[in-house]
Image 1 (tube, rainbow, N blue to C red):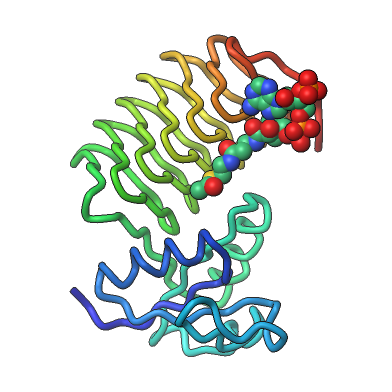
Image 2 (image 1 turned 90 degrees about the vertical axis):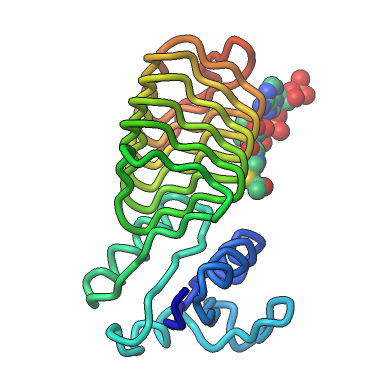
Amino acid sequence: MNDKKLAILGASGHGKVVADLAEQLGYVVHFYDDAYPNKTMIEHWPIEGTFDDLLMLDSTQTDVAVAIGHNKTRQQKIALLLDKDFTIPTLIHPSAVVSQYAKLQHGCVVFAGAVVNAFADIGKGVIINSSAVVEHDCSIGDFSHICPNTALAGGVIVGTGCWLGIGSQVKQLVELGDYCLIGAGSTVLKNIPSHVTAFGSPAIVIRHHN
Ligand SMILES: CC(=O)SCCNC(=O)CCNC(=O)[C@H](O)C(C)(C)COP(=O)(O)OP(=O)(O)OC[C@H]1O[C@@H](n2cnc3c(N)ncnc32)[C@H](O)[C@@H]1OP(=O)(O)O
């Protein structure tokens, strides 16, 4: 347990789950969101200011979690916070099972019931959502989001900023490029290039995007 302050950027549904997790880890949480001052509360938690207000805090006294689901926005905000010397811890739910041989960089969240198996390599700012399974030897690129109940078999490689939709699954050793979006419930059997949306079982590329 600790009683360190954690500023949470993003007063959203995802932010609420991050707050719940952080409190279980002993943090005292404070929300920040650019909707302030029009929005001043999220559930029972006060929103104390905007992102600019957060940047004015003493980085030696307050850690930060960026609870923004949009991968590129989360990437940008984390970069700005690191420039100001904030610590962005990785938060792991007590019920998640993370191998002693897995590596996770800063700014990740691993939610309830998730499994990160041996020698998985998880980049910065990654969301491993509830009950997701990241099997042995997987590599997850920075700022990706593995949605609830998604399962990655052994040795899967996921690029930067990918979004793997709820309940999707990826066959062993398959590689996904950067910033790709895999639709909910899809089964990915073959490599997927960067900057595409793919879905279905088996998943096929539906469109290209930036
Ligand atoms: C804790 C949390 O909440 S984490 C968030 C979890 N959320 C998710 O995982 C959502 C992931 N998003 C999806 O799967 C979306 O459907 C997307 C992004 C793949 C596609 O979204 P859009 O581009 O808006 O597509 P849209 O909804 O208009 O559907 C277009 C067509 O594709 C089909 N389609 C859309 N998604 C899928 C899918 N995942 N699998 C199969 N077919 C799909 C639709 O049925 C529709 O078909 P139709 O034209 O025959 O009616």
